[in-house]
Length: 184
Image 1: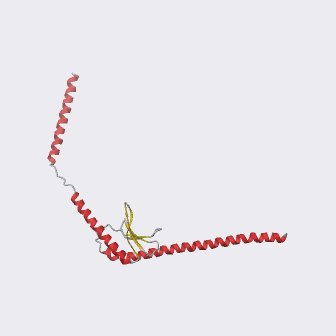
Image 2: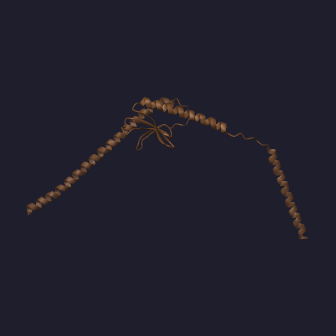
Image 3: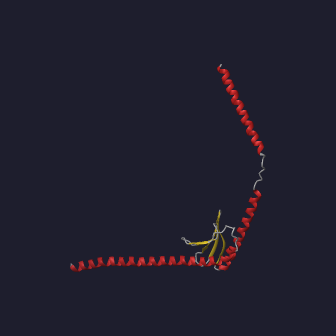
């Protein structure tokens, strides 16, 4: 019986060791996957920063009074290079292709997609030019739509005030006279 007990004890001792080894191996694999995900995200951010630097000459030409563009790399779950509040560049699924997208009220549209930085820079240049023209048209439309207000002479308003004051005083005097005659 002692052999049977020894065999049973050995089996019990080996199970936790196997589970412990399996847990250790699973933790190592999870850490490797996490490391790969972090490395992929870092690679995405690095590629977006390279593109951001390639856009520096374009944005150096944008006049200072034009405040449409707020460029920068956000490092969230999905890193993005923002051009303005509605357009940004994100890496494609293969993490090597740049995808220039714009959010519209009808959904997201892809403006350009390429592996090459110069192609995306050209697309962003065209987008920036179109946005600046839209801004100019909006400014002209706002200036044309401003209503012309005629200034009315202030004397007429003041005269109406004096007339109202005099009529109010006469009415009060008449009311007081009526009340005093009624009391006699």
